[in-house]
Length: 124
Image (cartoon, rainbow, N blue to C red):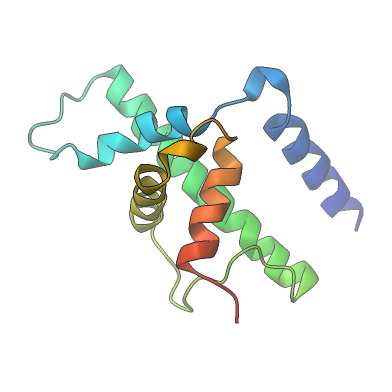
């Protein structure tokens, strides 16, 4: 329980600190690099940073969700298929959600990503 408290405290500190606030526009910008065909992509620092930021967010949220599943049994934020979901699949789900809901882009990026996953992977 002590470890969970430390993890959640660190996570909330990062997510909800003013300096770390990134909204849906930022996430849309970062994840949009997935739409650039790899042969056409200019592999530069900005491209790599956006790709890493997007896929890192996907990995972090799906991992956090697994922790919730294990620790709280019915506490999962969303219920991915048993075989899991790749970072690329997760990013495309979030990207579609952001494009389909432009009125929400001013919300926090984590909140939007979780909403996208809950819509794509509802718990029964």
